[in-house]
Image (cartoon, rainbow, N blue to C red; front, side, top):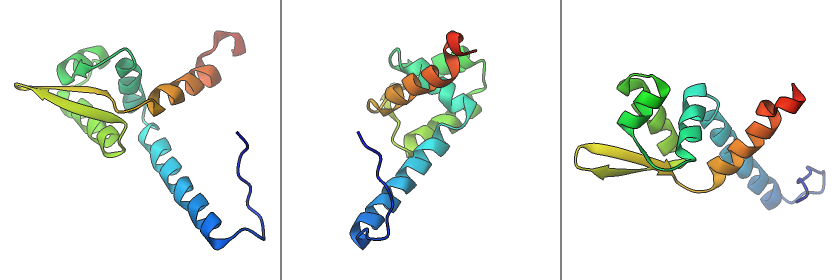
Length: 113
C-alpha cells in the first residue's frame, strides 16, 4: 500500500480526510505509548483475561490495571465482558495484534541488537 502524499493541488476533502486519519492514528499511538498498556495488549494477544489475571501477570495494583484498561477501552482497543463480579477483557479487533507484530519486528528482534 502506498503512503498518501500531501500536495498543493490536493482537494480540501482529501486533506480533511488525511487530517482525520492522522488524528485517529495519533490517538491510537498515544493509547499504546504507555508500557503498562502495551504489556496488557501483549497478554491479551493470547486470549481473554480477567482484571485479576492481568494484575498478577503485570505485578500491578488493581487500580493501575483498571486505569490502563479504561484508556484502551476508550480507544476501542479492548472489549470488556462481565461474568458475575469478574470483568474479562479481550482485544476488540486485529489492530493491536498487527501493531504488536510491527513493534516486535522493530524493537524485539534479537538479530537487530
